[in-house]
Image (cartoon, rainbow, N blue to C red; front, side, top):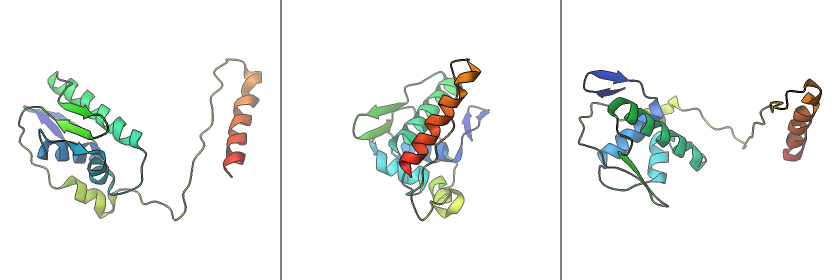
Length: 141
């Protein structure tokens, strides 16, 4: 949980781990690999997962303190916390992720293909969305 003065703001476990690492290294670049390790415990993830978490942190900080630029993006290097000094009272959140609270990966790689939505508004076109999903699944298999 993040507190701005006495107002609490809920943060997810990964967001807490990322923010904690950024704050511990305030003013210093933190690599994407270090952030992924802190937030996902070494699991193999796409870079966009980190980008989504950082964007959510920026929105949360903007909502809580009316400041959106406390986390800088360093292209091809990582991120850096440039906000004011903060008091932390969080046990090592990345250890909780590594301790098993993060979902484990299956033995084999897997991909989920979610159903497409028919955006045409024509119910007779529903077959097209279903057919696309079937074709993608067949192609991946």
